[in-house]
Length: 338
Length: 146
Image (tube, rainbow over all chains, first blue to last red; front, side, top):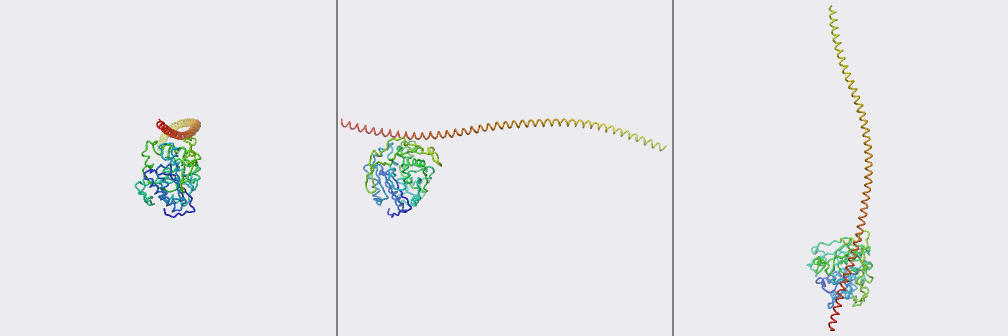
């Protein structure tokens, strides 16, 4: 974290949108997040990438320190820095918006809050425990990004036993540390760990209206649903050319899906069988809690206060629509059968 | 006398040779007659075979002509049948493509309906929970007041 920033003129500004809270999701969440954030921040800074981290703390639990405060206390260089923005969202939004009591975290609504307010020319929606790979950093450094292209990166899962107290390229890139053979992204949807890496220009993200806010019954599949909407909107989906890394942990979807096999409807992330590949959405213009009153908390941190004006209707069925077929792509209706 | 005897012997020989020649001539004549008869027979047979060949040729021509007509007719029938079958197959292809398209549309509509039902079910569950909470709180309040 002591690396001196050097911003390249060719670099395009990127907002990295994350969401989390201090609830020890998936065991030892704080440590995993802080190590990941420190690594990504260091590598981006060293390469002179113009970036900001937008952390949305969704529905924090009462009586626990805010994750944003823990981040600023631990990584003190972020305090008052242009490279960090924290947004705390009142937990009543979780209660008011949820359409599934099993869902404890409306992850993609939280990400929409960040996407709506991020300032970068390009936005990377990712997760708190995802480490950016070398190729990804190269592309960001070179500013080799095109508008209307949704970039995806394959996720390489590292074994739970890997010591992540000192993250290094040798450790990340050692094939022996991988939990399973490297995943290869396949067109058209380039699925697999989709929510871990979705990089798109801000104008396109906004034109698409962010992630699905109409179907609030599941959080699983919302990321892939966005890819279907992007294709339907005529955007290109492209592999950025290198992986991101994720350290496997208890409670991760890859492990939890085995636990909920044959009782998918009970899963805490919603029922995976919903038609995320066959149906898209038109979010209301107020997506991302646009009408939520915002109160500053400190330098580059703020709180979204609760207001029913910011809450979309519980049910708005007209906003569930079918995707559009595009030349050169499979007919969208066939996605569900893949 | 000697000369007379020689002449008589010679005459006797000549008479014998003449008789032999006459006999040979008769034999040759009968052979010639036989050959003439045979020739006549062969001529007759040849003429007969010629006439038969002509007849057969005519028959072959007739059969050829008939076969050709039949083949043309059959070909026409096959062509017409083939065209009908091709048209029928094309029609089936069109109908299949149409059915697939309709199925795809129906499947899409079904997916949208499923998703909408999920939302409605979710909303009903959430409202049910909220209602129960309100009623429970109200009951507690009423009990406390009593």
